[in-house]
Length: 85
Image 1 (cartoon, one colour):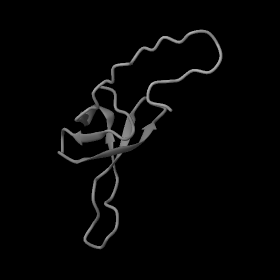
Image 2 (cartoon, one colour; image 1 turned 135 degrees about the vertical axis):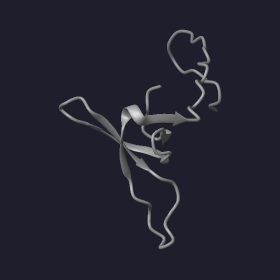
Image 3 (cartoon, helix red, strand yellow; image 1 turned 90 degrees about the vertical axis):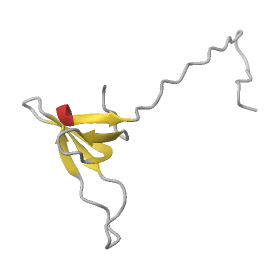
């Protein structure tokens, strides 16, 4: 599954979990993601980000695809769209 920034991920080798916050691509083709663990330290600071190879990451609870609602629009001019008033 493709990793998108903001996905919750786990490093399948170490068990390290967090949010994918950036993507790093090298000239040699290596792709890494920065993984920000959730929560804060006992000192009230953010936990350290770790960079993990893409091949080691698995997306946790991927978002379910949303079914696109088809609406039929007629001609030009003003329209009322579902959910907007």
